[in-house]
Length: 184
Image 1 (cartoon, helix red, strand yellow):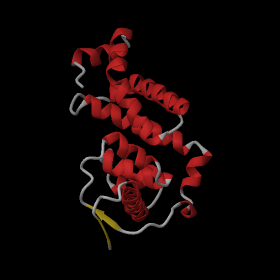
Image 2 (tube, helix red, strand yellow):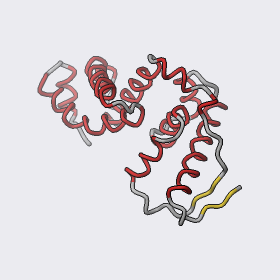
Image 3 (cartoon, helix red, strand yellow):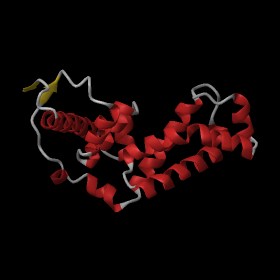
Image 4 (tube, helix red, strand yellow):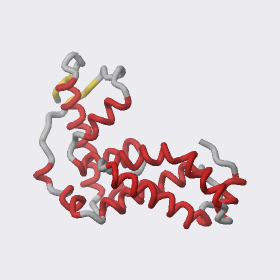
């Protein structure tokens, strides 16, 4: 999605029409990003609103060098993480007892799986592993960035990514037994 420099400059001047255009253009995408991190619908909508407020408050920090959409996505991811960190549930995510051990599996035939089916499956894995998986695999954060954002070590980030992959592969094997899966 492209928003013109004119619209961005309008937002810099706090022009409500320009802000409305940004909101209408990016709302569906940003809501989808937030929902990857926050399941509760009401909380997700609150975070989306907080994200747009931050965009309009910090738009002077956007320098037109990179994608405006990418800049906005980063704000929404960080706003989602800030929200998670502010809750007691977030601290509970780091409990290793919450992580179910699973077998190492390799999958070579899930091409027919829809994106929505895959996202539903990802929603079922342990919360902290899901968080790390989303940041790394979907949003493109490095393990160093994840460790800084979540206050965990790089090794812990890598462990959670591995755990997420194993959990997803195990659940795929259960949901789609016809898919060829090999145990390591």
